[in-house]
Length: 203
Length: 203
DNA sequence: GTCTATAGGAAGATAGAC
DNA sequence: GTCTATCTTCCTATAGAC
Image (cartoon, rainbow over all chains, first blue to last red; front, top):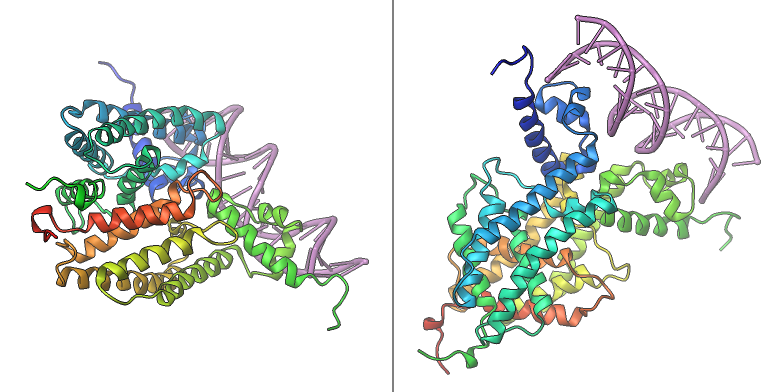
C-alpha cells in the first residue's frame, strides 16, 4: 500500500492508547495532563487530538473496551459443570484478564468516577452484565448446597471486591507469579464459600 | 473566654477537614480544587490557607492521621488468645475503624499516590507497622497449625486487600448493616485460612 | 478570620504553517 | 500527521482591605 511520508497514524494511535492506560493507571485520570500523555508518546499535545476528540472520550473508550473485554473473557471461559467448577473458571478468567495483559496495566474501576454521567451509564451496563453472571454461579451453588450463601447480592459484591483487590498489591514481574496468584485466589475463594464444617459431608 | 467577633477558627477548622475528607474520598485529590473545598465549607478559597499551608499538606495530614488512627485502633483491640481469636479481633477493629466513622467517609489508600515522596514515606512507615501486626497473627496461626499459610507475606497482602475491598461497595446507611459486614468478613476470612478439609481434626 | 483581587502558571483545546 | 503558537479557562497561592 502506498502511504504518505510522515503518516504514523497506525503507530501513534496505539501508542496514545498505551500511554493513556499506563498514566491513568499509575496516577489517575485527573492527575494526568494531555501534555504528559503526549510526552510519553513523543509528540506535542495538539497531535493527540487526531486520535481522540477530547480527554474524557479517551478515558471513556478505554474503560468501555476494558469492561467489554472482561465480559468477553468471561463468556469465553468454560462456565459449565457444577457451581464449584464454574466459580473456579470465573476466578481464573477474571485474574488472567485483569493481570495478564501484554501492557501489564489495567485502569482501576475507581476511575469510573471520572466519567460524565452519560458515559458512566454506558460502562455500568456492561459491569452489571458481568456481575450478574457471577451472581448466577453463586446462586446455583447455593441451591445445590455447595456454597454457604445468605445473601447472593452481598456475596457477589464481596467476591468481586476480593478479586479486584489483587490490583492493590500485584505487580507484573514481581516476586509473586500469576500462576501463584490464580491458585491462591481459587483456593481462598472456594474455602470462603464452603458451608460450615459440620455440614460438610465427610468422605 | 473572650473571643474576637468573627473568630470562627474552632468551627471552620474542623469543617475544612471534613469537607476535604468528603471530597477527596468521592472524587480523588487531583480532581478536587481548593475552590470546591472552600465552597463546601462556605468560605472563599483564600480563607483555607489559614488552616493549611497548601493543598498537599492538607492531604498529607489527613492520611497520616488516618493511618495513625488505624494503628491505634488495632493496638486498642484485644489481640490476645489463639490466633483465630486475634484474627477475628483484627478484622472487626479494621472494619469498624474504616467504616464506622462519624463522618462516614474514609480516604482510600489509593490517594497515597498523590503524596510527595517525602510525605509518602512518612505515611508508609505507619502502614508497615499495621501490616506487620497482621502478619504476626498470620504467622502465629500458621505455626499453631490453625491457618493454612504457604507465604505469610502474600497471605497478609491478600487479607489487607480483601478488607480494604469493602470500601469499594459498602455504603453507610445502605441496605447492608455494619454488623452484617463484620460478621460476613470474619466468617469468610476465617474459612479462607482454614487448612484443607482432610487436615481438619474431626470433632 | 474572612473577603476581594490578582499574580503567575498550567490546563484543555483549536488554528494554521509545514 | 505533526508542530508551534495561542485562546480561554481554571488552578494554587498570596496581598492587602475590612
